[in-house]
Length: 450
Ligand code: SF4
Ligand code: SF4
Image (tube, rainbow, N blue to C red):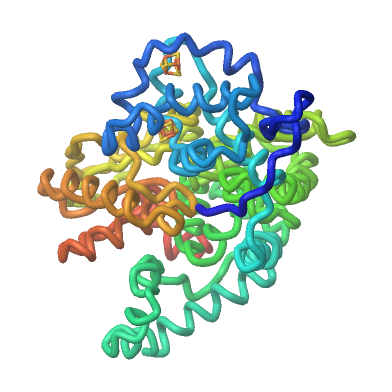
């Protein structure tokens, strides 16, 4: 991403003083100090694996953050800005670091510093405002836009536009291909409650977010049915909205915190066993609300309490014990691990255990299942080339398995995989793992959730 140059302020000796980190959201010194520069994270880093350059590695990026913290370079140094955004924030480095360096906290804070200190040119700021404030911060506007996209798909306009190649000339064809089939009916959180047959085993609240309650509303309905099949009452609290993950990744922490505040208010008073999430990216950031809102007066404690109850749906089902489905699904399936499930939340075995419990389903492992697919928030838009390299690498690994279907657990990955498989001329179905469980429970008609 290009950012506008800002002149450095003069130093005490008259020379330019490097532009320094300024509170709040300074990359934590304690996290920086944990890095012993061993380099064990390098082979796990997708950008290092593609580019083989030290600055494009976790260790190199930590060096750069330290250089700014120590005043050796300014945060407007081109290499610093380039590397803070070239990083996918996939957190694969964290997962293998023997010193427990919480790299995500460093890069997300570094991006927040850049965004605050180096205002973008006006057109970029306007676009940023339209997307992050105009759309993601307003469930109403978000639903309106996704409705229009659904209409575009179902009216036949999409087919005509694609056939005429209209978007190719505008350079938008690639992005348009990412559109998922939009659900016909959205799931608007209004405090609805669903109950299982018989006496409930417990009660959970569902986080439906923005994309999962609109474009992927059918996946969220499947999630509700799976929870009902396992004996839980499910409540969809009113007032919830986007989790703020995209804002955190983009360094827009102030805007993200406004959204987090809304979700804390919506979930803090719910008397439930857990807050269930079916999107890995949302789950990862919701679990960090305590840290992200630590300085928010009157909110910090409740944010910590909400974060402590968040569970990915696969994590929850395995933790509590799930009812194995009885319906057969005669399919060979491979599982793509979302970075924010496997690296950020350490959830690796649970999705596989659930998939293996479906009668007839054969799970085949792809190579590099935990390597980022290149989706990474808006990375496929901001860094289309590197994202494309990672997407093609992932697709090659999927196709090498001979699987008929791909399962995953995050909307961004699902979009990226679909686009990549289409691009390769092998459009295998890509499904959220709860959709497969739901099909095997076969409760669509009897659950009242359809
Ligand atoms: S982040 Fe961890 S694995 Fe990577 S160089 Fe530092 S200490 Fe080693
Ligand atoms: S978050 Fe991912 S891309 Fe960024 S340094 Fe770590 S492993 Fe590399």
